[in-house]
Length: 449
Ligand SMILES: *Cc1c(COP(=O)(O)O)cnc(C)c1O
Image (cartoon, rainbow, N blue to C red; front, side, top):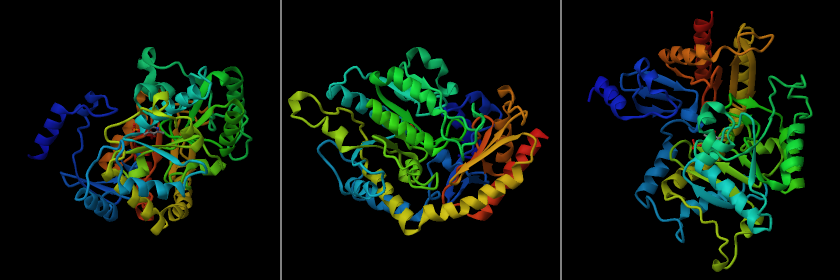
């Protein structure tokens, strides 16, 4: 099949995720043939630098030799097995390795097959825990404004980004929404580097009012990624932990985007020195190789389900592909590579360079309102007016225009609204990062000047 036919047939059959398909009339799907390191190569011979890690999941480069080898080896041994009553070596190995890295107390692992399903499982687990420990009145969930936790009905309910959830409101759960941190437009006029997380007062109020009815609060620790890489102080997280303890509310840490070294530490919770009651992982977990997610919890929660069968206390949650051995093999290898090659520490060394370079290049531009960074995540928020922080009219689709322009120059940006960001594989080198910054800046100037 030639390339034009491929594109034609793609459009004939495929309903792409998170897309207005009519946009594809102008910007056709790019058919990728192969990947190598931080680059993707299309059938028409173009190279694309993947600084968004193919939706934040590619951690160690495309077609990483070690992960590929581990998956191939597993493929010839065991491809899948029912995970109820059966197990396999790679699942056990993964838990043994992870338990040493996770915040203290997270020791029981529940396997699902994507991020949203992990969120669903975490919510059900929390509710059922309270139900089975004499708190059946705890039926509500709390979440922050601008949160993103996935796309299924439960996960969308706790999410707070209207772009994804607005139209479904009539069928979503009634979630207690707490105004979350907004450090660029801080209502106290403070700076997140030296504030005392004063904005916890909104959470205080909600906990006072609804704490006794609430099973769990779910948060993205430190970075509200889909909201535009909004970064907030670890102090907020620490204070939230305190509130949860006081009101017997579970803290669910959605580390699907922030885990695996994205913030400079293995898990974002480490910046605040806290342990959540439940943690969700996915994306980087398999290095972007296989769909898998984990819901990890404490012995305390696990024990509330542990009873003679006829008491009906089991967690009856399941997914067909739970604990898939291919995914587990990839995930085990990812942890080995992180350790052997000192990936997170090395990424952190590069991070300073990238951040300085981005600030140098972008900060004086008249439409760059905010530059924020943590680990290798760097985000640039574009505004119409820097002084008033007034956003552009979303109808202008500034971010999308910049995206299209950068694509022509071989860079995959995929901005979140008018927030351009870099969230590259942790192995990216200085040359590639310099190139990405350069192309992003040129694209921005082309559209805005
Ligand atoms: C991507 C993401 C999810 C959803 O994961 P899927 O695998 O896409 O369902 C949930 N929470 C956060 C923070 C994410 O970034």
